[in-house]
Image 1: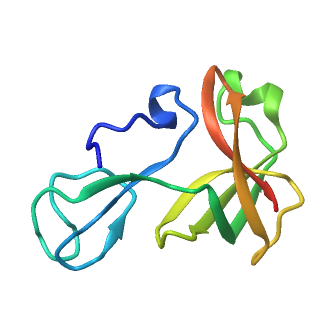
Image 2 (image 1 turned 120 degrees about the horizontal axis):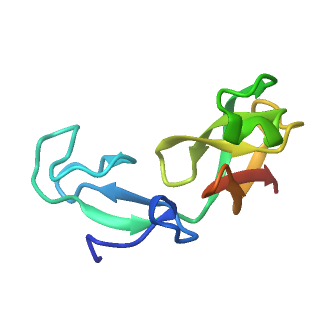
Length: 118
């Protein structure tokens, strides 16, 4: 797969991750090597956007003036079906173990992944 797939960090509605051909480990943060075994050049892949909530935290106080309009907002840790865990925003009523899918929404001037119940 293309090692330069665009994702939400660049404004594209997608989440990308890497998969190691040597040990089958997956990792969310882009690196030039596998964090599990050290093999070079793990493959970049596009995630499906499906997962399960691992943890959730409702933010009730704005950290910056730009986020004030969004309060309260929920920060969630999601275990994706591909096998990596990521932090994102989600519906305020999400609970641990809820199955979720991603959409993308504007937040403080950026496009971000946003998880809701499946």
